[in-house]
Image (cartoon, rainbow, N blue to C red; front, side, top):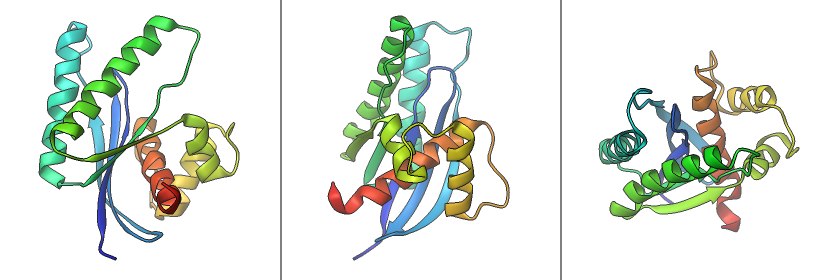
Length: 161
């Protein structure tokens, strides 16, 4: 089996975290990570365009074959949930344009996969990400480790997908 390159995304309209991994079976290697930050003062359509274009650019640069993205959670604020769904959609569209296989994982599934508990705290998830990837320091902001958690969840579930 050859290495598979993966982009994992924690979508957000203010800050989106992403990470790039190579993996083979259960061996995972972190290649790159970062954030996409649309301008807060821009209108929603400009922010969505920025998310789409930056995602497309990252995919072209690192050439993954798979995208793993966190699925929407259903919060009390319907407007925020809808906007987050729009952000997810434009990033998934970028992946679809470049023929990536796209997989979505619910936040509880990600936490369960890494921590054994679907109700784990963000700090517990960060700790597990840091342990699994043997990171010397925890990347900031938390959106980056959230994206890494999505990627690790994909690798952990790869054989059952």
